[in-house]
Structure formats: structure tokens, C-alpha cells
Length: 228
Length: 377
Image (cartoon, rainbow over all chains, first blue to last red; front, side, top):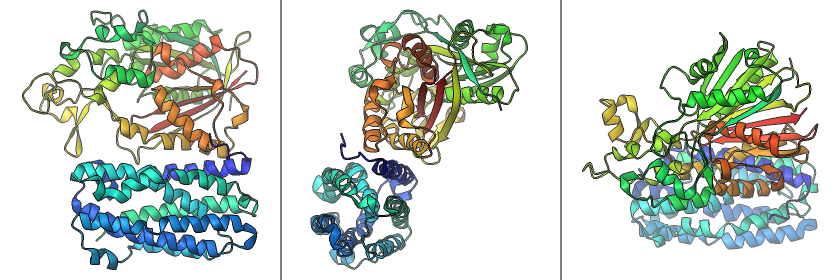
């Protein structure tokens, strides 16, 4: 498997990303909202709070990918297309999330007007800063973390929430959908990583650094959800 | 500081091997009924034989301490030492015969050695490497010239039906329940045995020695709740310790003395275990291409498969033909595992001078991982 992970430089990046991921994923266990979910103490209010806060993350996500695409110079036109396609596939996700919110008694006007929390501000401030630099392929490190949440955590959280709150699948569709669909992104990720971008000076280290910053800020965003 | 060598290897397995069809009769049936989880657990762990220190009537034929002492005696006999040379003894186990004093005292007594220094290590599987690291450090600084280390388990005594049947079930009607899956998992996974090694600051003159390059142990308990549990039960959100019940009988009825495993939590520990390994690769402590043999303790084949997948994705997989395991034939013997793996590896595989052996002992108890690099001297 993973025939694309061949060069030593790429292997080193993948190993360090795995370390960032393991640190991030295991530290999530200590986030109050996730801890509550694991202990079976989740309330409908908690689910609504999660969706309220998460919508900003989803909307900003497709914006910074589009920004990053526009910062990619012509010699990497191929990779730019990949970024653009990615922005297109994600950009309607928030509609699914909003429908989930309304289906559990949330007020649509409230979610549309909801302010970004402190962690979301910090995360996306950082993302847009990086995305505005020329050839910001270090954002692959960000995608590794954010899509990791989608493919490895979302479905598990979705089914825990569904079971604890006795909801139907359609009411947790955003979380369940991401668990089922983000797995293909890893192959795409490896293909982009192996497409020559690691020849840019210092890019491997920068990808790992960006993933570590994003992991920390993503956790902050989750921590801030329970800080009213 | 001195180089430290493993100069002797010993293993002790009680009684004849017990196959999958015989294991439940050997342990006894809970409530007289066959377990509905046994086939599933065995399908996942792929164990086909194990040993029990209980006979078929449930009577103990050995103690944890006597099995450890037997393994040490074998290890010493396989070295160029005599038992009287050993001045430091470190023991590792999950549950000793007694709550106190520590197991090392009893193993010392069984060995009938004169006054020596001892240390008892109690955790789960990785207690083996804790004990080994202490002995390694003792020999390395010149405090002791020869040290013995044992890992031993007598898990089956807690798997007899009586250890489950007194638990009051959720309905509070006192009827003997079916043991929950998280208890049955360990019941059909763990078994008994002991392994040992002896260490010196010089290699054997004529026999095989393995030099200890390093031992690296990492705990992730800051972020994980206990995944294995004995001596407490969940009481709402918190853990209630067995000593906090009104009396021991109440603790038993609440299930506080059952040995249980939260499987989902254990699975979620795989990335941090793999990350510990990968970090050592990045730091250059492990060079993947230089590893000739891998002795990785794992509790079931399905967990190994998940680990392999992660390693492959990180470009850090050591080819599986280099992996050595005796899980299927010897069973999962917890703290004894790494020692019985090494004992068998040194007999079965042809080891050549300069070859490197990487040992990995993860512990799901509360998220711990131990790695060790050995070099054929």
C-alpha cells in the first residue's frame, strides 16, 4: 500500500506528520467537550454548540484553500488545479451542517450570525496569512490535520452523538458524511506531496511546522467551544 | 559507563498447552454456559494454544513467584554464570500472588539466594522493560556485576467463573450475569507463564550474548483514561477503588475485582505508540534498514494489522518477514511476553554478530510504550 511514499524526504515528512497527528489526536481526549462525549455526558446543547462553532471553520476552510490556490505560481499549475478542485468539493458542506443544526431545534438565523470563537479566529488568521504567501504548499500540513479530523474522528463523534442523544442519521449527517468521504483525500494528499513540491527549499520542514501550528489552534478552537 | 549484555534467556510455561476448544472447560464456564464472545475474541487474537498454572480442576499448580524463579533458574543455566553470582533481582508482573509485599521478595525467597538487592515492578506488559531498564542501569554504572530480571503472570486464577459470578448485574436482582465483553476479552486473551534474562557487563565467552543498546519507555497517561482495569469499577463518571467500598464483599459485588479492558480506548492508543517509534526513527535512534529482527509484543493479530497499516503510511514499516512472534502458540503472557519472545528467538533464528533486534512492548493499561534495541555481540 501507499506506493507513493517512496523518497526519503517524503517518508520523513510523513513520519513527522504522524507524530503531530498522534500528539493532536490523543490530546483531544482532554478537551472538555470531547471528554464529555466519551464519558456519555453529552447534551443536545453541546451538539448545537459544536455545530454553531464548526460552521465558521467549514466556511473559512474553502476560502483559504481558494486563496492558497491563487497564490500558487504557474510552474505548479497542476497542483493549483488540485487545490481549486478541493475548494469546490468542500464549499457546500456548510449547508449540510446548517440543516443538522436546524433539525435539532437550532435557530437558522443564529447559526448564520454566530461569531467565530477565539480559537477559530487564531486558526484562520494563521491560515490566511500562510495562504497569501507564494506557493503555500505548507498548507498541506494543515490539510493533513483538518482532514484527519474528518476521516478519523468525525464519524466516531457523529455516531456517539447520535446514540447518546437518540438522534437519526440525518440529524448528524455532516459528521457521518465526512467520516465516510474524507478517506480518499489521503491518497490525493500523498500524490500532491510526491509531485515535486518537496524540492522547494525547506518545504518539508515548513509543512510539518504548519501542521503542528494548525493542530494546536484546532484544539484551541474546540476548547473555546465550552467557554461561553 | 559499562556496556551491558543479556547473557542468559529463560522461559517457563506451566502444564501442557491448552487448545482453543479446551480452554473454556479448563477455566470453567461462567454460569455453566458457554461464552458467546469466545469465538470472536479468538478470531481476532489468533491464539491457538496457551498454558495455565491451574490444573483442569482449577487448582493452582504453581505461584507467580515460583514460575518467575523457574524462568530465572533456566536463564542462569543458559549463561556462563551460577545463580550465586546474581546480586540484583528485578521482577515484573501485572498482579503478584499477594497484594503485598512485592513480588521480588518472594522470587528472591524461591531462588534461595543470600541477601541481595531487589526491585519489584508492577504495571502491565511494559513492566517487563521497566524491570529490565533498572537492571541495565544497575549493571551499567557498575553497582552490580550480574543481575536477573523476570516477567511473570498468573492471570488465569482471576478468570475462574467464581470471579465473575458474584458480580451483581445491572438489574440489581443478584442473578449471576453473563460476563461483559470487556471482561471476556481478557479472559480469552491472557494466560500464564514466565520469562527471564540475566545481565552482565561483559559478553559470554562462548555463548550468544545480546548487547543492550538502549531502552526507551514513554507514558501517555496524561491524556488517556485507564483502558485495562482491575481493583476498581466505574461509578458514574468516576472510578471507585476497591478499598473505598464498605467492605471487600461489596467491592466484589460491584465488579471492582474483575479484570476488564476497554477495547475502543485501547485502539485509540495505537497512534501514540506508533508515534513513539516514529520519533525514534526521526531522531536516528532507530535506522529502519539496519533492523534484522523485530520482537513486538501485541495482544492480538488484529491490533498488529492496524499498527502495520499506520507504519506503512508513515514509510516506517520494517518488513514483516523480520518480525518474530510466538503469540499464537504461547499465548499472551503480559509482562513475561518480551522475555519468552527473546528466549525463543535466540533458539529458533540464526543470529549473526552485529545484527540488530528491535523490541517493542506497548501497554494499553494506561497508554505506555517501551522500545528496546539489542545487538548480537
